[in-house]
Image (cartoon, rainbow, N blue to C red):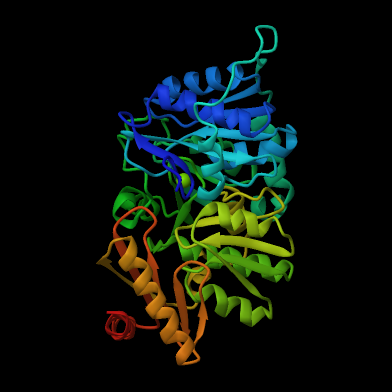
Length: 442
Ligand code: MG
């Protein structure tokens, strides 16, 4: 089992993820990518510069060439990998976690983030790397105008004339994360009127916590009404996740934002939809309507990107509002996805787009269980599903598809719990499923 790598890179507070560990991980990662060309970037966290310097020293010490992007949103770095013909990228970010946290996301040359399984291979190299010869330590350079390249790529896929004619007014809540590097200039250049809040990059996150949950974006909701804006947008710290607020001040949760993008993309072009086994049935309902297939993956960004890399999908996404548009990259991107929604504002209100998404309610519970019990419970669920000829998916826990929803039973990868999620048309029905299946597996 990987000791440091989780579902999306390494995460920890500074007492765990310190410069010493960052250096060792960077050395092993450099070795894993055959001492090639590596892009590095970070978010604005207070420990970012220290960890970055350790990562640069580690990579160059084993002979990697380092291209430094500075402070940048994750999707921009992930987009740059192909452009720069890099072998990998390391992003020093803890995404939506509290300020005392930091992390290292590792992405390979195709733009696929490193899963726990591949992280284990990197960890096997820790403590076993050798320094390069004195005249073969890596070179270091600053990346050129990467912002412009990314902006142009996003702009190429939307109709700017349409947006300019409508000139929608947007309130952008940058949440003191990395969004200000891209968001203000992108949406102005797309033809929007832009109002900014929490637009100073600040690793203390004084404006709001980094996770764009409904309770954390109260200020945005108020501001959308006050400004009579067409839409509000809020990102997490590294901008791979995004939520919107409609013109009436309604909070649109991440999986609904994904569903809105799914509808917009499928209207343009038919193709498969990739999502995790914990995503709302709304995604499948929409795919059915357009006559396309949903391909399910394990929970976690790396698995989504791995599946997207196989091709034939027009969109990928996960329940918390991470959306992948393959014309940009294989990574979750909170800017290109919003650009598509902004384009659609030319003929539809944000609240109308949200209303088009089939509505489901999700309920969750966790049962304490050690590793042995986790396996037992999941096996029991699988046996029940098999014996009763139910429609089920067992790539990550067991998900049973029901007529008006689904239920998933899954052992947590990091904690001593089995998690049960149930979804249905009403809260009452979802709770009913949850209770029914709790009895079955206990
Ligand atoms: Mg994130």
